[in-house]
Image 1 (spheres, rainbow, N blue to C red):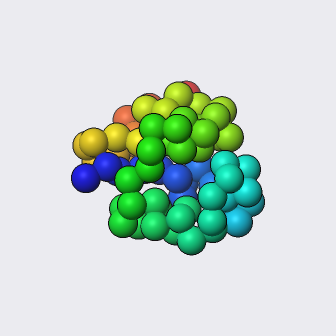
Image 2 (image 1 turned 90 degrees about the vertical axis):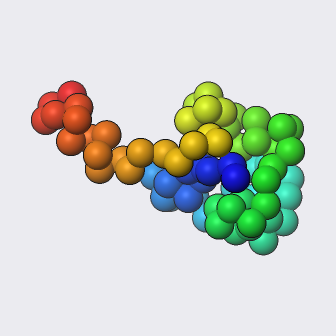
Length: 80
């Protein structure tokens, strides 16, 4: 299964599914399928999504579950 942080990146940027879909040239329903893990993107679509968020594709998609952001923040400590 391919895991992703699409919803997290969208929320961080205040972007709707529709806006992301338009930016990458797919149906908004496809973004919902991706976020739920019901659909694995093509390499091209995965790279387009990462490009919209201006991050490496590895920050958006992974074969392993992502660590919760709250755990990452606690490990970094205050002010980092």
